Image (cartoon, rainbow, N blue to C red; front, side):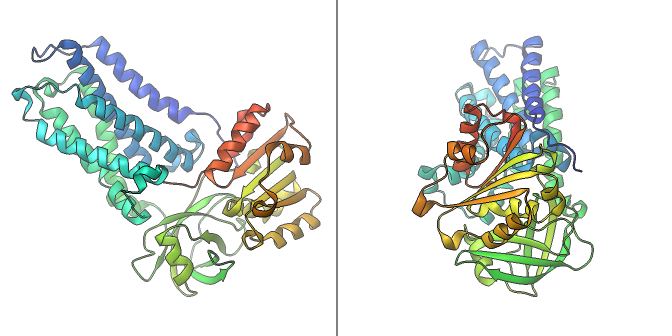
Length: 429
């Protein structure tokens, strides 16, 4: 059986602790007065600058996708969520730091590099936020591939920011707070270099062949891959990074949930067109093409949960539940209520298979809702159909972000403990 899902926030607590330690060190070992700006402003500027450098260093660590850190954040998707949150905080701190810069000619040695780093950070953060901010996406329209290329520049601007920090006279003297920040920066740069230049040497991408491409509707395909050699090791409900060849368009790895069971001879992915890359895949992927797969990732794990479970799927979010459902050991050991919400009949992917599994297993009951005709599920309705709130019941959510956040919030409001509500977020931008 898999290890229990880690629902704590140790990763976020640790990062918060790193920044808190930085503040403590600055108050314990305050900087010398440069006499070129009010001391309070100088102190604030140095504290803000070092704190944001530590935060950005941590985003570089998280961007490297170290699998050993996944349990401490609750999965790779939660690591990316922390990455986005840190980016927003760092963005605000950069703006704040800009107003603490002393307007003296003695600091000109560091200003040009600092300004370049400042502008680079601002642009990259805006690009990162654009997919979630409609007013930004109108001006910054980046597809996934261009977004990843832009994102790779973060380390470059970070190094420029570090050079700026060390070329300013009052900051170049090695103090205890400065040394601490430098260590954090070196760690961040090391992870950045590993990710950009060496990760493919150590990350086991396995070779596969596209065996089948089944069109499920106008926007969605099921891709079945057959291993060319050693297969990846994964657990039901996890996802993997996949790229295809030949051709340049599909060469960039993308994350997709594995919808097959771990003991199956093939890998199955259900992929919906949601951008340039996936649109090209849906329309041009053919049997015989090669694939490289890296995984599995994620901590979305029903095996660590209690015996009674409620699975709530929205649209393409049914994929991890398919992986669980196709694993006989999972069904036989649990009592499961599956609720599947789709727009219309053409979106009810694999519903016949789900119905058949429910008929064959007394442990599984399945309910579908066509939202365009019947409206969406309500939490009260789901609780009523699944026997109400119980202290020994787990809830698993996968679907659009708005759906998972709304259901999670409402379930907590009705008394469901937070550690019994599990969801996975697949927007990695």
